[in-house]
Image (tube, rainbow, N blue to C red; front, side):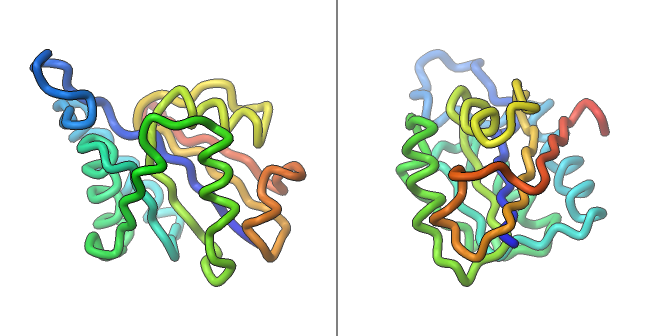
Length: 162
């Protein structure tokens, strides 16, 4: 089995219009939601083997907060430029190239591509609000097959449900 967690970054600030998009930080709600989501994932026993994050400040901050809650070393988060300002197809290419040694992978990124990919993997997921986590389990030994057949399990965790 391979388990993929698609995590949309927590709510970000738009207070400084001069700040480039990539540099936008989390706002107060984002700083509240990310730890709550991380705690819930920890309660569920989630232990990622690999965390990949967009280089955008808001995505990486979300990844770091959740990683700490899961006992994952922040220094081990892999920042990947390909996860910023991309497409669902590009995200799928990144996922399919993950080494098969990793069984549980978390990918932190942005909309609309995360919702689009989540919906492609499971039609039951139609929207991913900020800090939502889509979880997919695939009955496969290789990441290269992800998206070629339906997942064995698909679930969505929304911060407002916590």
